Amino acid sequence: MTENPSTPDDAQRPEGEPRFSFTDKRKVNPEDGSVRPSGDAPADGGQGPTEPVDPIDAEAATLFEQAAAESAEGGADAPADARRVAELEGRVVELTEQLKRDQAEYVNSRRRIEGAATASQEAAIAKVVTSLIPVLDDVELGRQHGDIAEGTPFHSIAQKLVEVLRSHGLTRFGEVGEEFDPTLHEALMHEQADDVDTATVSLVMQPGYKLGERVLRPARVGTKGPA
Image 1 (cartoon, rainbow, N blue to C red):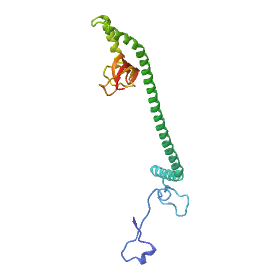
Image 2: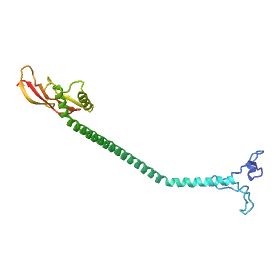
Image 3: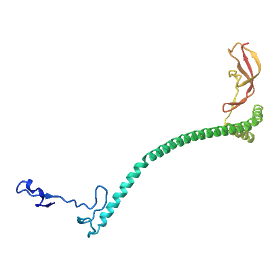
């Protein structure tokens, strides 16, 4: 800020009040970002001598121009970028739903495979155990006739066979006094009796065997009950 006491408006200024004028000394034009030359430009627009431009001011002007250009370019591309983002978000949702469907299909396929494997294993065990039921019948007959005495080697072998089959889920059923069940018993003979209200097993000719809940062979029995 400098004082200029010799302006044409001195007559309108109160007596004794100094006249001030302001000079803009900013080196970068705030309107267009251009670098102003240092010092005052010649009044006649000639090629008068000028001071060299400060490198920091030149760099500031360059950055100003780049920022303005990027801002203008970004404003023009904003709608296109928004559409692209919307397309990508839609694609993400679509792929997520597809992934969920694939995972559900995988889980269902795995369950079917495991179920089929378990059923095949149970069928194989049932086939082997069923083939050994006649051996168990012979062991039972040997016990009834006293051929398999306790403490003998053959008794030990027979006991191990029963224990191994039991470990695979084999169970024996069919005892005298059980209520007759057509899903478990096969009645080969029947006699009338007034001392029972329902058909009851009175004689076991062959015991029955189950593997889990699966009946391998029904018990062959004689029954008694009302007519």
